[in-house]
Length: 146
Image 1: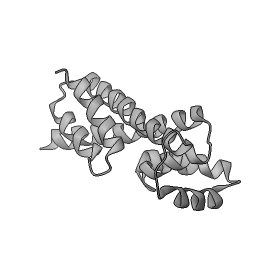
Image 2 (image 1 turned 90 degrees about the vertical axis):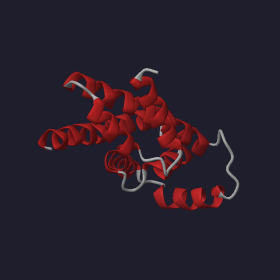
Image 3 (image 1 turned 30 degrees about the horizontal axis):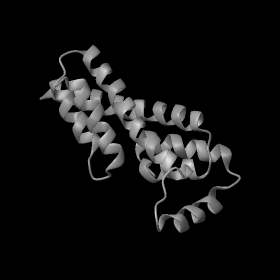
């Protein structure tokens, strides 16, 4: 199977399964990529896969899926975040780039708080793109040293 398809599918899975580490996946794929163009393609595919999975989490937070027991936590988060539109976007971007706070619950919270989907998608995709660019090109740089 095409490595880009594998990358896309694995990154969707890593977006939905927290213990499946996307950075390890991308690091492994970066060591096998032949050229800088291939590395950029991996970054784009990884971003697309990760955001596909995170969009599912966003819609779950929006109410498309019901998670028993999670409603109380979501309500508590909503009360803490209400009225902080600008800081919400900053937290979303910070989470997408660094993973702090973890992007998994932030994606659910973004849906729960009714952050516009296009804003979530744009900010999340930009952040994840930067995140995976650092991972892939960092691994490439280290790989060339050794």
